[in-house]
Amino acid sequence: MHNVVCIKQVPDSAQIRVHPVTNTIMRQGVPTIINPYDLFALEAALVLRDRFGGEITVLTMGPPSAEESLRKALTFGADRAVLLTDRWFAGSDTLATTYALATAIRKIGKEYGPTNLIFTGKQTIDGDTAQVGPGIAKRLGVMQLTYVAKIKSLDLAAGTIEAERRAEGGVQILQTKLPCLITMLEATNQIRRGAMTDALRAARAQIVKWSAQDAGIEDISKCGLKGSPTVVKRVFAPSARAERAALVEAAEQPAQALIEAIFTHQPQLETDLATLARSARSGASM
Ligand SMILES: Cc1cc2nc3c(=O)[nH]c(=O)nc-3n(C[C@H](O)[C@H](O)[C@H](O)COP(=O)(O)OP(=O)(O)OC[C@H]3O[C@@H](n4cnc5c(N)ncnc54)[C@H](O)[C@@H]3O)c2cc1C
Image (cartoon, rainbow, N blue to C red):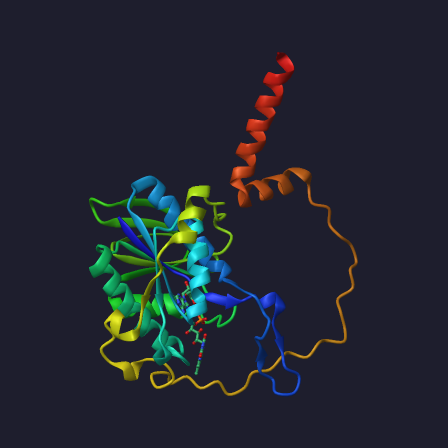
């Protein structure tokens, strides 16, 4: 099995400010991180690889500095990283981004083996459009499952996948055929810590760097600012509200519900605590 995970390097939105005069985003000095939603996608791909074997290629389109995010993704256990970087991509809107990424995914399939699943996050924390995943699926002509909370089953022989999708007002169980693109919902898993061997491998890894030409882009006019019909008319910071809601009463959360919520988000914690308790018990009985 070969799966591709698309990750985007984004400015840490918790530290972003909008310039009070020009109304432009002040990026200087703002640290960059892997788009948090993409880590749920990466973990979902890692879980499948644990079960079915195969390889994971992480892909990003961005400036040369985006290499840092790819290296980080390798520390979590991805097998290979591809950086799509070229001045022709500067100023890309979602239409141009999906063109470049879909072309690169085709090439990844040719170079490293046919792709079964393509993962993206649900959305980014900077652009926030949630258009890129579905746009890639459309361009590649593959099926798409969006807002996926859980992959319920995967049958490689039959070429089918079944997933739980959180929709408005309920949960849908959907089945479709491979290859397929999945946009992964937030808070559906917890990215693993990554093994020491992965960290060492990541530090030394050769990141594959492709220009537009290397990726096989045929029509450069579909890339970057030229290929971007979207016009941003205005960027502004919402003005702070004077009134605030008053806290009338803080509801107490029952301890059991709180513990269950913690274990859902940190499944490893439950196992670790059980192991600790076991070893404490066996120490006491000695
Ligand atoms: C006119 C215009 C000019 C722009 N110029 C620039 C620019 O110069 N530089 C710039 O950084 N942005 C620029 N942008 C923003 C750019 O459009 C978005 O960053 C990009 O298209 C992704 O959209 P999004 O962030 O809404 O992703 P979403 O659709 O919200 O992302 C969904 C998922 O798609 C995947 N994904 C998204 N983007 C990438 C990527 N680049 N690589 C790999 N996977 C990805 C991730 O898995 C992500 O979770 C511009 C936008 C416009 C409208």
